[in-house]
Image (cartoon, rainbow, N blue to C red):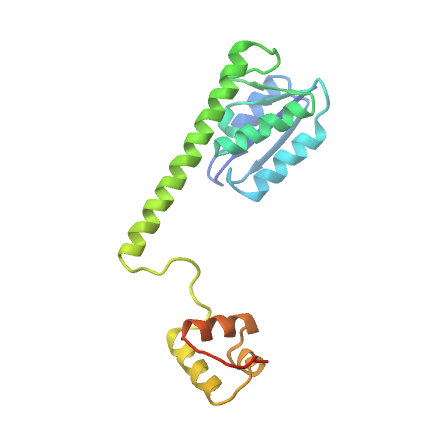
Length: 194
């Protein structure tokens, strides 16, 4: 059975063009959606497709990038399709895994090489961005739940004897947040706070 998969990443893009190509190519069932390639919705649609296909089925897409935005997502989709005993065929002719031939194996391996390159580049850019932010003295990570002013008030309240539970209620945060805020403010306690 030929099973199609179509995806557009924005509401402005037209899904009908892909649906027509897939129908013209002989797809009996088509999974589709308008969602970002990185979104959970896309993962859900791909899972629906993989759950549906059976051994001997042929998954059809108009272009390889319709499976997802990242090469990792695309490679995972290809692996899952193959694990079900199905093959992948790209209408534009860039890949057909129905024959276990050297060209299609090379294409899949090449995609894997580029996926690794993509991950390495993302890591390098992220590390550079962090180093630059640290050099500028910018805060990295989540913004604290309480402002500096609130943290100072909380510290003062704690020094005046209020309990952790009372402080959590008063500032509308959890007890772990109170502990982290006190640590951030340099509060030292010689006793176990309740």
